Structure formats: structure tokens, C-alpha cells
Amino acid sequence: MAAYEDNNPFAGADELATDQLQSTDHFATILESEDQEGDSLGRRATGFPSFRDSYETSSHITDDPNAERPAIREGFSSRIEQLLIGNPDLEILIVDAGKSHEGSGGGYIAYTIRTGDLSVRRRYSEFESLRNGLVRLFPTLIVPPIPEKHTMADYAAKPTKAKEDSRIIDHRRRMLAVFLNRCRAMRQIREHAVFQKFLDPNVSWIEVLNSPPLISIPKSILRAPPLDTGNPTPEHAYLPVPSPSARLRDGDNMEFQAAEINAKEYEIIMSSGIERVNKRILKRYGEIAVDLAELGARYNAWSLNEVNTLAAAIENVGQAVDLTYISTEELISSLLSSFSEPLGESAQFAGVVRAVLKYRHQKALQYEITKNSLAVKRDLLGGLERTEMESQRINEYLLRRDDHILRADGQQIQRDSLEGVDQDEFAKAELAMDEDANVVNKQGKNGPEESTNGSTHHDESVASADVPTVAPARRSFEDESFPPTHAHMEQPYATVPRVKKSNGFRIPVIGKISDAFHGMVDVDPETTRRNNIGKTREEIQIFEASLRTAESDLEQASASIKADLARYEKTKEHDLRRMMIAYAKCHIEWARKNLESWERAKARVEEIKVK
Image 1 (cartoon, one colour):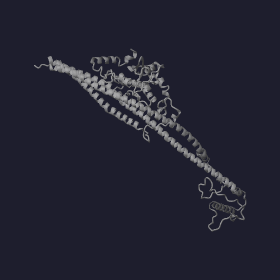
Image 2 (cartoon, helix red, strand yellow):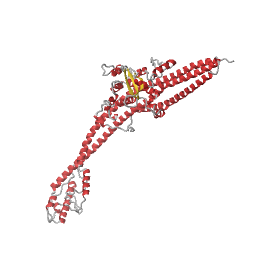
Image 3 (tube, helix red, strand yellow):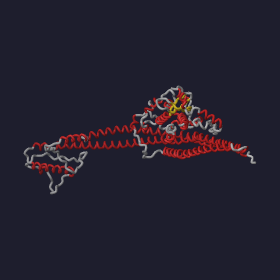
Image 4 (tube, one colour):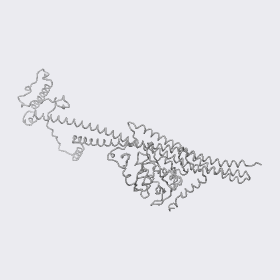
């Protein structure tokens, strides 16, 4: 034996259990199958993980019952790969659980895993990291659960020895073996390098956790392909990460909704219903066993005070009570391993199914959010482009207007060249020129119109002898492609900008604040708008690529989850059938054993001679 087995509380446990079972003989074949199909499940009640034929039945469940088993390829990169792929039905065993003092810590429980002729030791935290890695590698698969961590009640009962509790370690030993064999039964996991390296004694598990593909998986698996999370594409980086509580606006697929509801109801029935009642029953069986042990001792003490046939009868009754106590203890142990543990695992499976369906729901949300974001960006681009078109039309109109003003009436130049002209007379000339422009515009539309006094306006009626000759009136702009916003109002002439007067007193700080404010204000809205248009178009291209990626991911995830749900349902039905058969057989054997002992006691009681 290795040195670390000196501290193993389970040293010789297998031999002890074997001796006990051989002495009682009634639990040696408790899980032997009577299936008409010829299943031969030669398992012991205390060895729940060793249901070899059970895994043989569920190892190759596929959607197509007529599908052929995959061909075994030649050439392997490691011995463990050869064992797993070359012999898919090879059972993985945990042959020992002992305390290890490797490293600088205070020691931990290590589980010895045997796969064929290879053995490796792993601790519970490494099993946990393996499952977490498999969940991230295969988010669309129903990865088997592992036994839960220690509860606060365990630490409260044994503050310093909770991690070394033999009952908890034995439970973990069985269920971790179940976990490994269920993973081995799934082709995607069995053929993956991460699972193979976990069973390889020549590989450091810490290096596996810090190397591809595990290290290549994004922080959020929603930003990775569902079937290859270790190789995300650039488009995946732009996918949104929905809130876990978000809901789809258009509703989800009815088939997946029904599956989620069924998984939730199944979890409630198992964890809050059957499992809770079963714990109470086992507790009462334990209390009965304690009372039977005390009662047997009382009968044996009583038989010492009697003589002849009465003493023998009382002694046989005491022996029957003792055998009932022993068989009840064995019944409790058998129910724990063959019914309670798989019952708890079945409830955990329901939680795993809900987590997988939630992943698909978030993928559907991701697609919906991306689709809606793309629609918003397209609407935004349309608005920006319409604004740009309107701006260009306005600019073209203003350019033509300014060109016409400079060409048709050089009034501004003439005004600057006039010196000494009376301002009142210049104002009268300007007013007359505006009136003349109005008349020309009206004539261009409706022909000559009479004024309010009934006379027709002529160009020479507005001339004044004291005012210099002015240019002809401006032409009408009614035929322009973009009319003025207020066409009914007269367009003012260009005026000379006013010069702001200063009172000679300034505050230096105010000037700096003003400069900073003008720096924040958009001084060139046209350039900003055009930049926004270019940026929005780039964002739309990214959203279109992300939408295609999200749609493809959703289709792949839905197909993979649907196929694995079918596999899980078949496995669940097989497990439930096996559990119920084991539950019935445990009680049948318990009752048969008690019947035999009490029949012997009855025969002795009937031999009592009354004087």
C-alpha cells in the first residue's frame, strides 16, 4: 500500500463490505435485473456506481435508433485516448479515497481514478473545475452533475472534521464515479482532449486549465459559437449580452418553453417532494433500528433469567429482533446508494436542463436585440441622410439667391460709393425699390395687378430726380427647385454686419470661459453630420454581420439542444426504471430476511411447554 493510505479512513472498506454481503447473502444480487430483454445488472446495493450494463445501454443513445456506432479510428496521441475511443464501453472506477498531504496545505482527500491500466489521483475541486470547463466547452449539452459541496449543517455538526466525514467521502466516491461514466457515455465529451487529459496521469491539470481551449473561451460564452466556444469569431465580440431576467418580445419556441416548464416541475417534484419524504422515511428507519438494537438486548437479558423451553424461545425472539435490526441497517445503506443518491442526481439533472434551456433563451434574446438594434441604426441613417439632402438643397438655393443678388442689384456697392447723400432720401429709394420688386413678382405670377387706388405701377413712377438711378428689380424665385421657407415674406437685402461696441471694461476669466464654451459647441454641424453618417453606415455593416452570426448561433444551439434533450429523456427513463426496481427489491429482500428470522422464532415459541 502507498504511504498516504495510512490516513485513509476507508482502508479495507471494500473487503469489509464484501465480507458483510457474503455473510448475509441477500444483498449480493439485490440489483440483478429481470428484464425480458436480457439485462444482467450484477451489482451490489452498496456499489451503486458499478452499474456497468446500465451505462452500456445508454452509452450510444442517438436520435436515430438505426444509426450505426462510429467507426474506431486508428492511431492515437495518448494511451488514455486509445482506451476511451478504442473501447467506449470501458468503465471508469474510483478505487480509493484517501487523505493526501502533497503540497504546502493541510491535506485534502484525493480520489484514485482507474481507467483500464491507468490510474490518476484528483481532488474534489479538480472534479468541479472539470465540470465547469465542460459546461463552458459544451453549453448545448446536458453535462452530468457532480455531488454538491459541504453544507453549513455539515460544518456545524463537525466544525473541524467535515471534510473527512466518512459518510460524505463515500457518497462522493460513488457519485464522482457516476459522473465520469456518464461523461464517458457522451461521445462529444469522451473524444475531447480536456476530458482525456483529466484521466491522464502524465498531465498536469493546472496546465490544462491555463491553456487552450479553456483559456480561449470568452468571459461570456454568449459571445462564442455554441458548438466551438474556444474559437470565437470577430463578429461574436459585437454581440450583446442579454440580462438573465430579460424576456423575448415575440415569445420563444413552444417546444423549448414546454421543456423548461417540465424540467421545473420535475425538479420541484423530486427535490421538494419525493426526496424530502424519502429522507424522513430513512430517518425513521434509523430510529427503528436503534430501538430494535435496544429491544434485542433486553430480550437476551431476559432469556438469562428463564429456563428450559421458555428461555430458548425468548432467546430466539431476541435473535429475530437483532436480525431485524441488522437487516434494517442494511436496508438504509442500500436505499441510500441505490435510490436516494440517484434521486438527488435526478433532481440535479433537472437544474442542468433548465440551465441549458436558459442558455438557448439568451441566445434567442441576443438575436432579437441585434435585430432590433440594426433596425434602429437603419432608421437613424435614413434620418441623417434625409437631413443631409435637405441641407444640400438649402445650400444650393442660398447659393443661387446670393448669386442673383450680386448680379441683379449691386445696391450694396452703390450704397458704399455714395457719399453725402441724404439718408432719408436713400431710405425712400430703397423702399421704392422694394415695392417695385413686389410688383414684378406679382406680375410674373398673375400678370399686372392694380394697386389699392386702381392705378398700375410702372418702373419710372418710382424714380426720383434727386436719387441716383438704381438697378432693375430682382426676378421672382417662384420657379426655383427649393422655394424659401417663408415664400410670402419679402426677402431682405444683404446688410453690412454690425460692429459690436465695447465699453472698454473686460474680465479676463470671462473670456477664457467663453472660449472653452465655444470649444464644446459644435462649430461645424455639417461636417459632424457627415461623420455621423459614415460612422452609422459602418455600425450597420457590423450589426448585419453580427445578426447573421447570431442567427446561425441560434439555429445551431437549438438543433444541438433538441438532440441532447432527446438523449437525456431516454437516459432519464432508464434511470427512473432502475431506481424504482432497486427500491422495490431492497424492501422485498428486507422483508424476506425478516420473515425467515421471525418464522424460526415462531417455531421456538410454539415449542414452549406449559406445566
